Length: 215
Length: 215
DNA sequence: CTCCTGATTAAACAGTCGTTCAATCAGGGG
DNA sequence: CCCCTGATTGAACGACTGTTTAATCAGGAG
Image: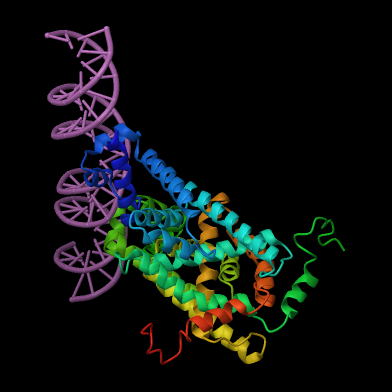
């Protein structure tokens, strides 16, 4: 009964390290079993991946609430990868986000909801400016935040296959200064670009926009 | 002599649509030839991909200067994909950025250099605030911009395999309002977070930082 | 016409893939 | 003790993979 879990854990490690194109026999060998046994327990390779997805998502969700983060995905990942036991799952997550499956969608939605909560709490506390469209803003920030980390990971992660958490910390340290600067004082010197856009496009997220481009 | 180009173009289309795991015989069939001929012309599958990379990079680089963009990767891609002839290359680019190879690195570096130029010009013109570390800022913005678009693409691109340029335009329209808002008025209500950080970390990009955490 | 080079093909090769099958083995309930 | 269920294995299967090889074919040079 512990064998199935051993296979699943080995699959998470191997998939995270070498991608989902790796053969079933390699995963089986990692777990000390045969390829036939893997499908005996999980039915198929896709089902094995689904089992990995479910487990990783469940563990990360449970562990995420314990991690104290300032809201950036990279710092969350760095903090989780710091616990040696969770590092393979973070690696699996990155791989899964790159491939883009159901796990990726679920996780992104989860992180997006988190971002929305963080931002709303910040607005409530008076430290974050209110937005014309809070949902669009949080979605935008989440996409940029996760996507940026992912792009960086896909380019710099294979450099040092070991010390995995350190890589995320380095990335965090690299982006924190410009991010704080941008978030504190913006990028444009005045509001003219925003005002021009708002003049040109009549309140995109507004309720009633029943006059597209008639006359 | 035109056959090799036909094979390369078919490979760009097929790789972009189905990923690089697709078989050589499928690519060959798309070009109306045999798998053997593909390797006769290119040597191997990897060499074929390298040829695709070179061609796509050369074309996109040449065409990019003609495209009038406001600096975001999504708008550049949307504008390029609008020309039906370039759409497959944009698709190939997205696929390549997701896989993370030499093409991806080259393109990201290229776009990053562009971002740096745009920002410097904006600062010069007085419309963009100067930064404490212009290079770090442009790198940060480029990563976020490209990565966000990429994450969105990996999740929403397979929804409508046809009208490809429209998808990028939709994404642009979705992120433009919150982006303009963020760039115009920032995210924090005051500079306290930035000041706290600058107080805590003594000028990260500064030249002399020879007192880490001694006493 | 002859020769030769390059394009092109069909077939074969060696390998890996996921999956299936029959067999073996251990262990608990009747 | 016997039977049955589930774990486990090794081998096989068929379908792919990228690549190689031999053969055929067209066309220009001598």
